[in-house]
Amino acid sequence: VDLYKKKHQLLLQEKKLFEINRNLQFEINDRRASEEKIVELNKQLIKHVDHLEKANKDLDRFAFMASHDLQEPLRKILTFSGRVYSRAAGALDSESLMDLKRIQKATLRMKNLIQDILTFSTLTTQQDNFVKSDMRALVCEAVEDLHEIISEKKAVIEVSPLPLLSVYPGLMRPLFVNLISNALKYSKPDVPPQISIYQDEASQATGAVSGNRYCRIYIKDNGIGFDQRYSEQIFEMFKRLHSQSQYEGTGIGLALCKHIVEQHEGFINVMSKPGEGSTFILSFPLEVSNADGKSESCN
Ligand SMILES: Nc1ncnc2c1ncn2[C@@H]1O[C@H](COP(=O)(O)OP(=O)(O)O)[C@@H](O)[C@H]1O
Ligand SMILES: [Mg+2]
Image (cartoon, rainbow, N blue to C red; front, side, top):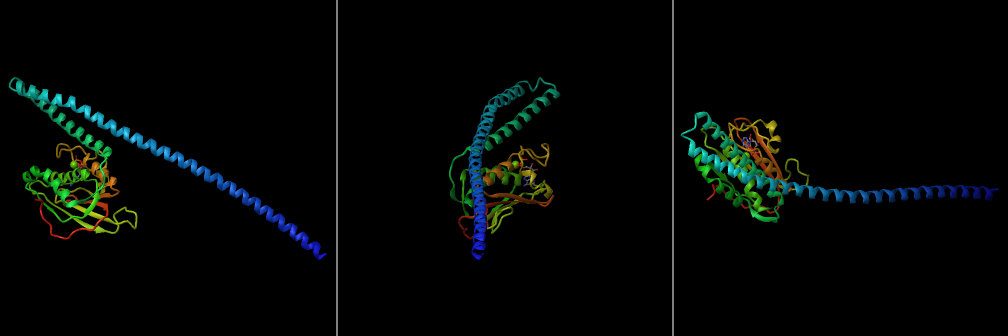
């Protein structure tokens, strides 16, 4: 009887084992199916990324071609309206003269817009490599580009020693030119712009993935400032807080800056208050530590 019981138990166990085995087989099949699905999805993803990259390139090329080709007729409008102005200014009534001036002003504005779009589109197609660069030297190059407006506005620009960072050097000039020219442009009337550019290492930049180390570069001005609630919007393409009649501009500059910083896997943020100036903060992935030294103006 015992033997019979044991046999019966063994049979039951075998049945159970068989059942478990079957389930395991099902599970393995399921896993295999999911794995195959993942591989398939991955393939699709790669295809989509390729497609997106191509679409992006096409868009850049389109922006480049469009803005490049639009420049020519615009140049003609400027030239010929200028000629009409100088030839017939005496013969025209004041209203017509005013209209002619408006045409020229709008054309100039369009020229600036097109130039900025062109800069934006060529940035993304640019192929130069990351180079370990002295950021202070690059800032000083940008300051040099702006020397006319700097002396016109009697601005004081102080640049502290900055670190060596791996960057696309060609992209640093438009980045700093845009930020510094904003600091000069959005200054308080009758207050000479005071701009400081300095650094601070932070273990974690705003919005950064933890563990990564970033170097922050600050661009601080004593200008008109703005409400902090616009601190994200101002980096959007064509977004402006000030009217064209108050301060001329295209609203592309900061979108360009954001794009450049993001190409370096960095971040751009701003702190501002109306009437109390603005501080733009660039966070770059940290590569090499900096040299010590005192703040000086470039030259
Ligand atoms: N340093 C600054 N101080 C105050 N406002 C600024 C500053 N920089 C940018 N802004 C605001 O952000 C907007 C977007 O700047 P930007 O993209 O450079 O365009 P633009 O200078 O052509 O208007 C500006 O129109 C201005 O309202
Ligand atoms: Mg600007």
